[in-house]
Length: 170
Ligand SMILES: CC(C)(COP(=O)(O)OP(=O)(O)OC[C@H]1O[C@@H](n2cnc3c(N)ncnc32)[C@H](O)[C@@H]1OP(=O)(O)O)[C@@H](O)C(=O)NCCC(=O)NCCS
Image 1 (cartoon, rainbow, N blue to C red):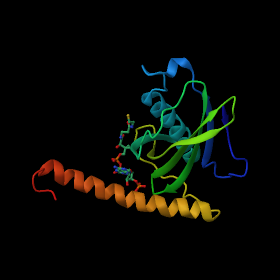
Image 2: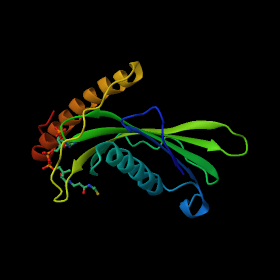
Image 3: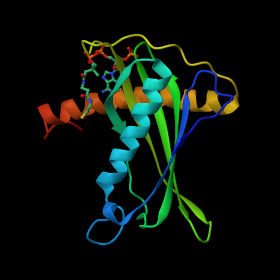
């Protein structure tokens, strides 16, 4: 089940709702983390590719934290948005809400961020349309995405230092 925000002229948002069915369960009877990751990847792919009018591949995923288990029978609602665009890359923010169908109560399960790169038929990065900022919320998301982009680079730099010199990287 997919739907789109009709005021979103750039098609930068995407919503998807999926019912958590028994085939998604792990041994404890909750939804398997891998199933959630797969759904998140699908949402991020669809959001980024639709926005860029190009095939988009996942470069990295940040802040995947499973704070609470998701129960079989809950409705999983995914909200994705292109928060930021570089030249060929996009940050897609994905928010997941789980809703208890009968009671109608909902809770925030996870928010994570995908770095997606638009590519051509030879898998070479291609330019994406610059994201247009329409309101304060989008500006806040854009500014946060810029900070996360810098933070990502810093983590990569530190991770390399730790790999190269684990005893002295401090
Ligand atoms: C994505 C891919 C095409 C990029 O190729 P590349 O040669 O690294 O391309 P570039 O160096 O030109 O970088 C492309 C963009 O990615 C960004 N980028 C590079 N490393 C990044 C990282 N670790 N995190 C986020 N973005 C990153 C660059 O800043 C650049 O963005 P910009 O054009 O907006 O400035 C290539 O890495 C690839 O094919 N990766 C595999 C993707 C895949 O199969 N994903 C599925 C995973 S199972």
